[in-house]
Image 1: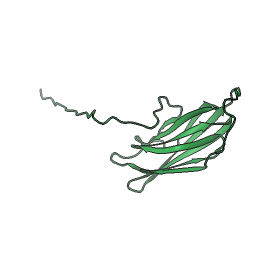
Image 2 (image 1 turned 180 degrees about the vertical axis):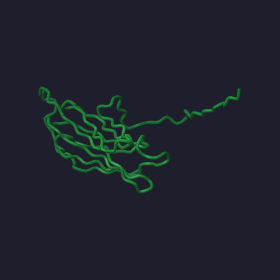
Image 3 (image 1 turned 30 degrees about the horizontal axis):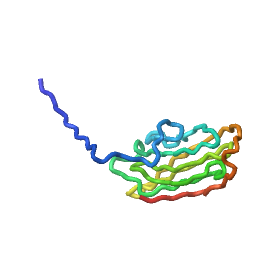
Image 4 (image 1 turned 45 degrees about the vertical axis):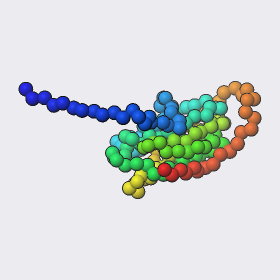
Length: 148
């Protein structure tokens, strides 16, 4: 009876580091190649500062890389964006959820071959009691762009 032996090499010398490593799926979207119209819908609490990640690994062909990412916000007083970055095949941005309400973000990435993909997030920011810990709320940018 013939059998096949597989060999797997793993290089642990260069660990993968992400500027923001979100554990759950609240602010991380695993972009799908099979359902491109899917919108990532989530609820968060006001006064949280979180990383929002659009992971395109499951949506783009093997070997393609993200060379630029643009983040757009509908309500920058609800979602104050900062520190946009690219981590491998994912685009990410830090978001300070300041005011209660609804807001949408869109991550548009350009690949090394010129193709453009996007992922939309809809956030409902739930209100919570005001404890006077941050009285200097600001309005952020409507657009942030980063290149690799």
